Length: 139
Image: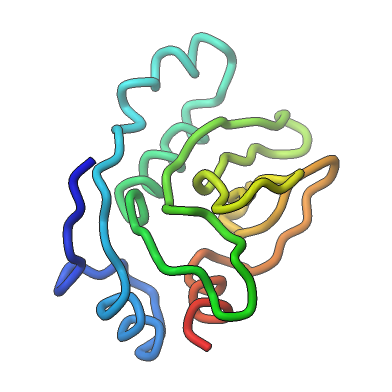
């Protein structure tokens, strides 16, 4: 796994304070492309627009590794789109990245781009990944 300093290649949509935090503390790790699994997911009934959302998420956030927040050690270890799940009536979620610690839920990206927790039910925490980074990582 290669580590790359973030420096001037920051994800867009962050507040000034969050951009500073990511620039100082963020590292990018190499991740695999969503495209290598696209056909496999399509063959199993995952809608193309869900795979497109995952690819866009991976392009924007994939591989971003941040230190744990001072309040807790939760959250994704690093951002990496994986495991689409859902139904056409409820919408589709996909994993935001593997968790730092063993927990009975997964951090997911919801049908409308929300960042939240999914276990037996969906619990959106923030309207976006940017909101989660701004709230928990920067304090």
